[in-house]
Length: 242
Length: 242
DNA sequence: GACTCATATTTGTTGGTCAAATAGCGTGCC
DNA sequence: GGCACGCTATTTGACCAACAAATATGAGTC
Image 1 (cartoon, rainbow over the protein chains, first blue to last red):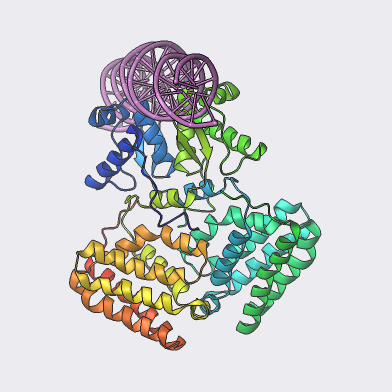
Image 2: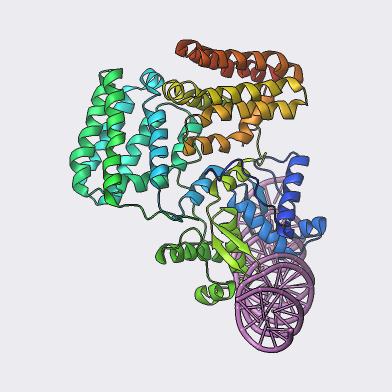
C-alpha cells in the first residue's frame, strides 16, 4: 500500500556512481561543509575516490539534482540548499494519473492546513493580507484561460497559508503545487472559476474579515470539498494493477 | 527570506543535459508514458535528441535521482514513482545547521498535524493503534543509545499520524524525518528519553484512551514544545552571514 | 514443451580529446 | 600606489571510443 517510507527495498549491488555519491556525503559531513563552501575539483575527486571523471560527473549530477550543490565552470562546485525547489521540480513530472485516493488525501491535507489552522490564522492575519486576497481573487474574473485561473486559485490559497508565517508549511504547500493544480483544473471551465470559485473565495474572505470562525471553517471546508464533485463525475478510473 | 517558491532566480544558459531532461519530459508526456512503461534505449535517445551518450546518461541520472525512472542493465529504463523516497534521500543531506527559525517552523507544523487533527484522530483511532503506541513507547526504556531512542520517539509520532490514514500527510512527515530526528536528539541524553519523553508519551496515550480531547491537545502541545528548552539552551548559534 | 548455452544487445565504467568559461596573474598605464 | 586591460592556466561542459558486466533472446538439444 504505502511504497514510500517503510518497505525493505531489495538492495541491488550499488554502482560505482552511488558509491561516489556516498563518499561525497561523507566528505561533506566530515569536513563540516555547509552552504557557501566549495567542494574539491572533479580531478581531485577522481583521485580521492579512484573513479573516472565521467563517473564523478554523474555523481555530481545527482547532487545537483538534489539541489545540494551548484556548479559553475572554472569556479567549481559550491554547496547550496535548493532542495525545496528541486523537490518541486521532481514532483512536477506527470508520471501518473492522480488517483482518487491521492486526491482525497491531498484534499484532507489542505483541509488540515487551511481549516484547522483557523486559530493561528485569525491571530496573525492583517488587513494587508485580506487586501491581497481580494486582489488575487479579483483576477479570477479577468478570464484569461483555465491555466491562468487555476494559477490564481492556487495563489489565493498559497497567500492564505502565507499568513501563518511558517516556511516549512509554505514549502510543503509549494511542493504539492503540481498535484493541486491538476486537481483544481479537473473538470472545470473558465466559467466555473468566474462563477463558483470567485464567489466561494469572496465568502471566505468576508468570513475572515468578520473574524467569524464558524463561518470560515464551514465555507472553506465546503469550498475544498466542492472539487470532489468535479473529480468524481469525470471518469471511472482505469485503475492499473501492478 | 523565502528562497523556495517565488523568487526569480537568474536563469543561466541551460546546459545540453538540462535540455535533454526537458526533451525526455516531453517524450514521457507526449507518449502518455506512466509507471511500468519503458523508455527508449540510450542509443535511441542519443539519435532522437542529437546528443552524445554521456550527456544522455547524465540526464538519465537526474531522472533516477528524482525517483522517476529505474534503470537495469540490458533491460533499460522503466518509469517508476519513488519520488517520495528520493525526496527523503535529498533531505537527509546535512548541508546546514538547523536554525532556530527552521526548528520552530517544523515544530509548528508538527503541532498542526498532531494537535489540530484531534477530531479526525479520535474518530479513527482503534484499540490496536493504542496498543501499538504503547509497545513503541515501551522501547524507549530499553536504553539502546540515543540514536535508537530518537528513532523510537519519531516512530511513536509517525504511528500516531498513521492513524489518520492519509498517505500525503504520512509522506510529508516522512520527508521531514531527518530534520525531526536531529531536533529530537538535540540536547538530550539517554536518560532524558527514559524519564521525560517516555512519561509524556504515556500521558498522551492515556488521554487518547480516555478520549479526552482537551487533555490530549494540552499534553501533546506541551510535549512538542518541551524540545524548545533543550534547543534554546545549547548554543548561541554561530550564525553565518552570507 | 522444457532445458541449456551461445550470442547479441544494453547499460556501466574508463580514458581521452576538444571547447567554453573564467579566476588569477602579470603588464602597462596613469 | 592603484587601476584597467589582456593573457594564460585551470576547471567544467560535451563528446567519442572502447571495454566490462549483465541479461534478454533465440538457437539447439533432448
